[in-house]
Image (cartoon, rainbow, N blue to C red; front, top):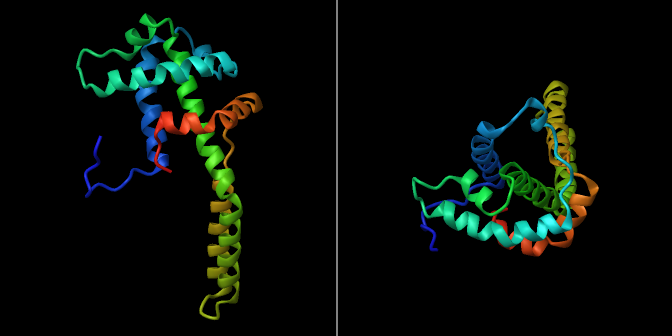
Amino acid sequence: MERCPSRRPVPLFWCVVLLMLLFGAYAAPHRVSAADSEREAPFTEEELERFIGDWPAFTAAARAGSEAFDPHRYLLERSWQPERFLSIAGSVTEGLVALEREDQAEAVAAELEQRRRVILESPDLTAQQQALLIASLDEAVDEARGDHGLADAEMELIRRHRDRLRALIDVIY
């Protein structure tokens, strides 16, 4: 599929938000109780393998653009609990983002430290301005570290299948 040359890549954050909103909208009407909204058990290697096998057909059906496409029914027909499938999709996306952050952590830390030095050494900034800018940097560091909230076992599976998952999910980092 060709991309329009004038379109800019969508930042990963917005891809994740869109994914969660879309899947949340489809899964929400089918919830039985408030307890269902709590975090599910970590996915297993078998579930991940099955997800890897089924994701391409699911996204192809969704992209076909048919108004009759019902993701909930589609997944049920393939013996998936829709909430579980979509939960795994969200966890995989979340895990890939976390791995990308890990990869970039050292470079980001060095860049933020350089910026901190520039701020502190700037003769043009007052102490108050420096404090505000440093607080902003510290906030960026905390945000970059972000807790992914995934179980260690899930992260290990995502890490082990990273190349396959990155190709499958097709997220622009």
